[in-house]
Amino acid sequence: MIRADPSAPVRADGSEPAHTAEEPAFGVYVHIPFCAKRCDYCAFATWTDRAHLVDAYIDAVITDIRRAVEAGELAPVSSIFFGGGTPSLVPAVSLMAVLAEIPRQAGAEVTVECNPDTVDAALLATYVAGGVDRISLGVQSMVPSVLAALGRSHDPQVVSGAVELARSSGLRTFNLDLIYGGSGESLADWGRTLDAVLELEAPHVSAYALTVEAGTPLATDPDRHPDDDDQADKYLLAEERLGAHSEGRHDCTDDSGSGGRYARRGRQQPEAEAAGRLEKALAARAPQA
Image: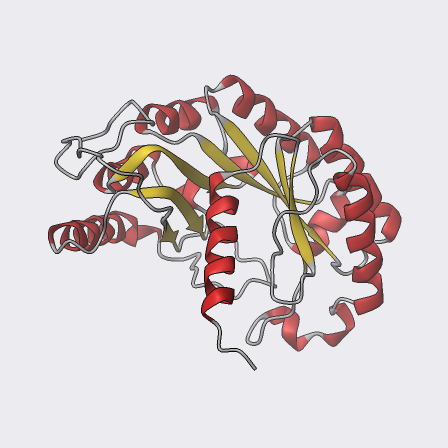
């Protein structure tokens, strides 16, 4: 059953659980391992040649969720994130069938990761009807030459169109993902990306430092590896420009702190809030020296 009300808590059978006390923040990540093209810096479990397995994979995910719910292992969640891969490549109705099986707390945030060139009005309408209230657009850069070097298939004009669709679709909010430090990207290029993103007035921006992952094509090409000093300069530039329009960096993208997420004032996301609480809880439980 697909629910049209994103704020209503639901079980797999469509019933609404009673809430007698405040429920803890708890997030679920659903991995969609299908891509049209694999970026050469990507180390995630994704495939470009297995579209014929999409239906079987979705059925398996639904079966797994139902088993977890029936076993009492999956209580209503506060945050759901569909990542990949490229979740927006999967038929939207199929993705919403998965969402309908996950029990949700009242007001749970539901995010789908999208490539800008896969977004259209019909896709977003199905997402909103199914309970999605946020998308995360994989922008990476607003400079064509940098996008080409990263192996991305879209252009900056597509990003602008996707943002306008997100605004008019009924989604509560959206996020733009950026990557800095790619081969051939100058500090001026990164500045152009930051300025272009600020012009789009996105409520939430994530800026990631490109990392070299073992086993990727990028790892075998040292000439294209990011430079630490260059990335440090770009990190500081992001802090300066994005930070001036936000409440500041409210979480890091990796253990080194080489990146951050920025929300316009008053727009911090439940996903980030839950991550912050988890970080504090883990720190509290860590053995003392």
